[in-house]
Length: 629
Image 1 (cartoon, rainbow, N blue to C red):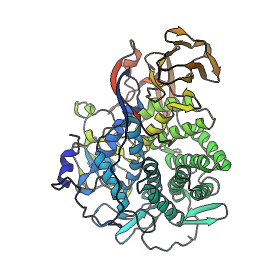
Image 2: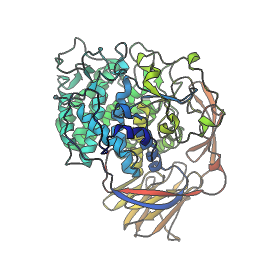
Image 3: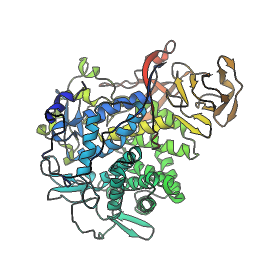
Image 4: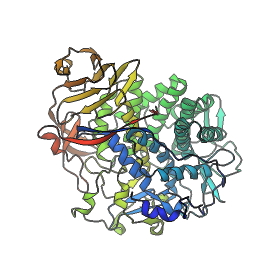
């Protein structure tokens, strides 16, 4: 029985069918859908005990489906407070970031094969169909959800005004939901998802004001029947940034469902944001938010990611050039050895590295690498360090007695109204266990949870879970009979299984499943003449294409070993005005000084000593690929 089963059962009648919710949805009679299924092949395998993104995806499924409220149709608890006397999860207006969960969830299942809480996923899908209005937009119920609105309009919640009535539309999260519908449409062509996606895309396009080669939203939120009128001034700063979520969804609809008009509208929106709105300078520099002396990193990196998505969909070279300039600027704002990118850029920013921007930078690096701008080493470093270290994988450190619980009355929390949840809108039921797989939101360079704020804002879980799939997908790539291993991480595939000993040893093993040509990319610290390859124990001479060692033709059943030196390096770095000493083995940080206090990062002494450790895992090969990166 999974963690939510006991509380979930009370929502079922005697026949096992879901009981009807008392929440007033805009569409009480939505189209029906079949329960989601993820067919594929499972098998046991003994693999090195190193970073395994499929395993991490399985943890994501836990975090994406367990941090929900069965009494409110499995709505997300957006905030998690792990350091309180009793860990708590809370509802707020920002529960609507669950749209990000419905992108990440099918992707993560497709990489790991987890069947945990499939009933929760099905219920959430049906709920979002019930929220789709006649105009195609997704409307969130107000009545019956006491946290549905804050006391006043909040720009970061996407509210231009405080809605009245029964329903409101978060336009930015409609963009994320559009992406989710596209994923389900690809997985289930016979289901209602393609129609839902195209209706939603058209609904979002109808909210746009078009002026020549640019477009912008008339508002960032709306209510049923509100007239679409041209605003007195074009949106700027955060209000402009909110449109990036919409552009990304429209680009995905064009790329994966063939709706080119949506991609062309996305290009107009992003042309305005990146070129004309003042949110970026001509050299890619991020500019400040309204009423802030610092620039929010994720709100900028999202635009870069969306612009590349538009290029992938319709080939807009201008946007790709703008995106590359902004990415090059973004790289310089963080520490590239660990992948620490600050939540805010500016003199007062940088106290925390929100995982949203780390996830974005990984995804951007992957996309650019596939387009020929080699960012594989950056991606590898960021994945292994700040990103992987800040996913909650264990709960023992909450209960082993070394953490002093915080007195929340004495802790200064964020001032935004949507960040002040009420106790009666929360739960203390098995919070730590249910949050496993989530991504912490305000980590420092050495500590997962600093203690100065809420532990998890689930926007980071949605973005982090998506990035896990993007990276998992691109560990290997297959083209015309050639398998390329781009990242030396554990990965099962239908063509070959990759077993990475890094950072225990400088070695990667590839178990071949079909006849193919094999290429393996060397990590940045290895010179080509240092790499030694064997196939079935016999030496194989290597040719090179850049950093790729060309193993050549191999047959089904062959065992390939590539070995190379790996060593420790000492780095003294300054990350946002603080000094740290890093010990890195390969690209992995295996120690940091000073260490953290609550959940210290980089406690990786086991990687420094002895031979590779092994473990037995269940691997999964999905029947259907989802090419989402």
